[in-house]
Image 1 (cartoon, rainbow, N blue to C red):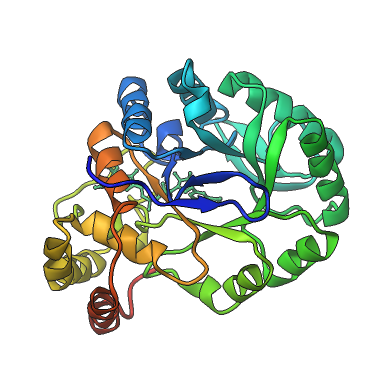
Image 2: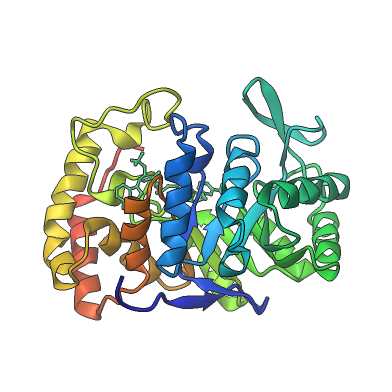
Length: 331
Ligand SMILES: NC(=O)c1ccc[n+]([C@@H]2O[C@H](COP(=O)([O-])OP(=O)(O)OC[C@H]3O[C@@H](n4cnc5c(N)ncnc54)[C@H](OP(=O)(O)O)[C@@H]3O)[C@@H](O)[C@H]2O)c1
């Protein structure tokens, strides 16, 4: 691995992390056709070895499975990682709003103080640590005022159990509420070159308020990796099996796009995935790009994106290819 990982600040928290973050949703198995623990642990180790410090997980990823694997992988290396995990998708209570079932258990969106104080202890235990670097409300709970949630999170911060506060899957009004209460360091939202809604509404607000933005599904669930050909079959509970995003037409467009940006990739001796991630990190207001990886090879590939700086010509070439090819995508 050559080159230094770009480091960026998590809002005003004083915590910094690598601009590329390892996402561990697939590592939890659920909605991704299962998980392999040994491969997952080597993905986490490969990320750390390549200078990626930011590791994003959540209790909901396999009902604790992803956090447990991250905790196991970080044993003895906790100080090398900036752990982001989440609260607000709960299966120990039926309070709040029902969201989905997982393994036969109803999971609710609930961000009451009682649940947050319960959840933090569960996450600390599974992650084998006594602090979380960035604690994020995973999905918003219409039954609890944001002020109550933020007071609970601020109390956790004062007690040293968390170091920074984030919110995920927010609408503009919710983000404004968080901002008016104060103390928000980051948001985490779906963003990639084919999912750009936040450019119009959330990013202007986060930029104006010094709040970091973590993009999730930065590779559009792997579609933009350049590795999903017409023959790739998704099995088990893999969410991509029946997802129009992975239609034959989308795969064809994405492969044509990969061909179009290959000269830019070649100029940086980069893979298509690296070029896509580097583009994502170059977008105004995008602070961190979370990229899932299921094995060490993918983790290393993605990590190197955090050392590539695209110039204005590269960006123009990529933007031109996006507007020419990645339009009217099935979604
Ligand atoms: N806050 C939220 O609600 C929320 C929602 C979604 C995600 N997230 C976070 O964001 C992270 C990233 O998003 P994501 O995992 O949904 O999607 P993603 O990063 O767009 O795609 C991840 C998948 O793409 C494939 N892949 C990744 N790197 C690759 C490479 N270099 N070459 C070839 N294939 C590659 C892998 O799947 P295959 O090998 O199976 O193809 C991997 O599991 C998540 O892991 C999670 O931590 C948060």
